Length: 173
Ligand SMILES: Cc1cc2nc3c(=O)[nH]c(=O)nc-3n(C[C@H](O)[C@H](O)[C@H](O)COP(=O)(O)O)c2cc1C
Image (cartoon, rainbow, N blue to C red; front, side):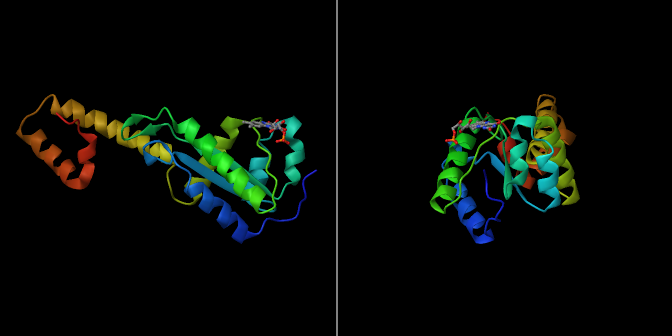
């Protein structure tokens, strides 16, 4: 049985500081953590995504949603899941060192959780990291198409984007 006693904010900060130090492939740090504290709106919503067998977790003081993104400027990141797992392990050990027990759960409605995150980030006026990358990807495709079909006007357009530091979106050749 989990204690419903709250987790100290300072301890949460220490835990996530340890998370930040976790190594990752290309140092891409493909993880995203969303923290819900009991009594908060986000916690309430997140707890509703739990499958029946995990309903006991509605009483825990903190629910953390661990996400990863497997897209990057270098293409698909095949190590994103590996990196996330490593980060979660770091989180668990750091929490344990501070006297907290963590229980990992896969049994929740992933789609529902995604929608909640979408809603949350919309409120904060942000896009989801994977949405930002999707926009970049679309832009990259468009630029590559233009490059295959160059005329003066398009060259100007491309130079403008290079100027805007989109240079790493271009192939080396
Ligand atoms: C990726 C992952 C998913 C898990 N999903 C669930 C889950 O949905 N519900 C649950 O009660 N436990 C879940 N567990 C917990 C394991 O069942 C648990 O770690 C294992 O039984 C060992 O127990 P202990 O962590 O209490 O020592 C999950 C563990 C991992 C690593």
